[in-house]
Image 1 (cartoon, rainbow, N blue to C red):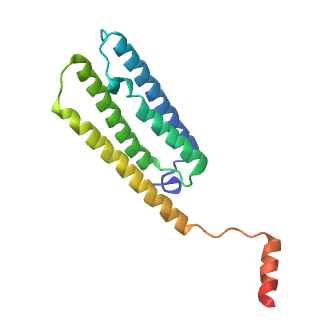
Image 2: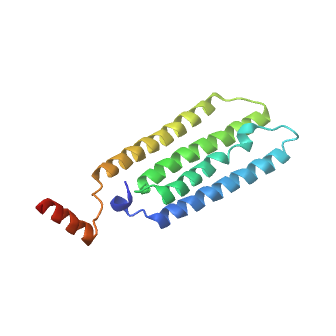
Length: 154
């Protein structure tokens, strides 16, 4: 599920970042246009729907710069499922708030999306800790190797 397992490198993660950024901009524009035509009624769910794709893009940007290994394709798809579910649920709740109605089915969006995001975080965290335990010791320079050998001979 990591770089070596499925070939998901920095270029692929950068494409996911661009996709999340485009989704965040699209949600922001959609929410703004929907609010303009809502006749003065607004919903914080509609206005805030762009935040989750933006947070996913920020996390992946952080991962590219600071974490090794990067999440693999399967984990990125799991994260995308969670982000898409939570974003769709936020947009649906926003539409229902603007129309002045409710629906009990909107409860399942945060549950399902939260489950996917939590599963992503758990699996990626376990993978990071496993990789850190397996990391080989640092490579020594030739001078350091000779110093160690000379110290052992004394």
